[in-house]
Length: 269
Image (cartoon, rainbow, N blue to C red; front, side):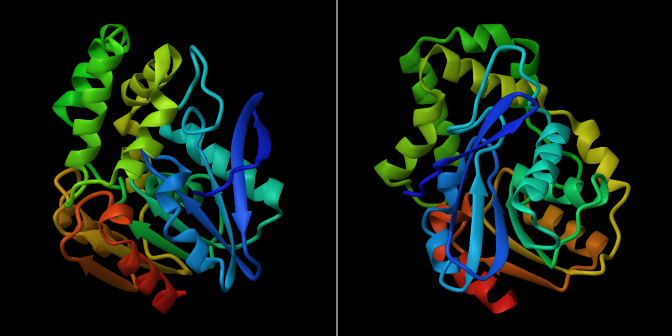
């Protein structure tokens, strides 16, 4: 498991982060409902040649969550900008999965961050986005947050299993579920869903163009959350330097095929 033993104060909220290795910097950004442990089978390999930074987004994992907390996509890209300054990073390589990909894209096109290279894995990046489940939660957030623990855990496990092509190992399911347990955890989980705002995608999608750094896209072809066609659309919008299809992998590629991610990243870094 990755160790997030450092703390950073962002808008009076505590953010957990950690790092491994030495060399040119690489920043790993997880998605939702995952946390930095999504990189636990990838970061140690990258750390053999790079200094690898990872963190839990506001309201997730070991980072602080609280009532009335703002956890929208624009906040997460603002957090990324603040962490770059805290870590004294100028132009690191960045790897973003799911909403982490959106944070990275907004970080560049909206916040003005510069990267050496950008690697996107099944990123939330183009419209349409969301699902009927997200819309339903947005209208009934309090009711969902009041679910009994056994019902919430069953819902969560079904959700994350649907993101994978292969059955998740017990340790994987547990490391993702643990931060969301309890009344506060459940509320934080549904808060993230209820605050998802497609305006944050629309804003940045209108800014997409070829960048002065290489963009590499990896995509689990069995993804039922964000189909391969959206990945190909993103490739065209960004004029990506490469697009790698990962077979026998769905949305959470880090669990289905971590070795394919490591190999592709090392080839393109």
